[in-house]
Image: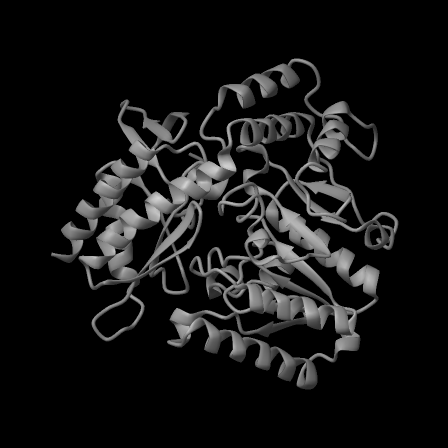
Length: 417
């Protein structure tokens, strides 16, 4: 009898039968508040009527039109619509299926357009599980161990993580920029450095936001040395952080932007956006893929953008995120195990540490599991699994935020009493 790989581990024991908005229902009809959103994917909630209608209409018309063989209208319309939300100057696009594929496409473009072999990534970053993307990932050894040799040409620099270092944001930023300069002097010369790859908020690395001075420092060094700045907005894009792009919080200007996850409300779709002069330097045949820019996924992405803009979901992310942050901080104030509540918009993490100040993944996992038993689905992240993250769909309302906060308070009390 065939079975799933035993290595696949579920964060909860729920077998989902249907979803609606921020709720999932199991096969027995029990309702759960889903504050995982499929790891930040179902941006408009489960089965938003406008997304469902667009996908159903497209399925009945054209499911697959391979886009290096023929072109199709949903892709052309999506490209036109993305000009409404993409940062200025990023006017050329390539589509794939997953965030990892988007990262690898950006890596290939960066190397080809600069004719330089090396890239700099930042400690704690997550860029994917495929070989090149995993080689650029430093949020945990589980993503890159056991299949060496991994891809070369990747150099790791510090990320300004105040909690990890036990410093202020200013001190952590000074250190990160100073060490980046040292790295460029001692490990990868600027003449051989194609790009800096950075998440505006560390995702799997623990929901740690960057800051304006750090990203400005990257931009200045990139401009000075002819290095590209690549923003990995796979998790932070599409309103997740309370602005359309996570980099918008910090006035970050990217040469290449990577997006996926919330782009199509659950349909597999990713993309990179770049300046025309860079995209034109990609080598012939270097971009393609059988399922990339699937017609149904593109139709869903257009509907997703319509919902986000017409329903004011970016502002809702900011407003509901402020309410959720306040609720989480109230819980943290009553439990010394939670030493930090951080993030942006509806991308918030709760960090657990023990009495010695060490990361406490065991208590974080226990709280996450207890919340699931009480009807609130959450995920953990961080190098030690010490952070419990809240990433509900952008359609979440105030009452649902209150309900989640109440369940979280009960769960934390239950495992720390």
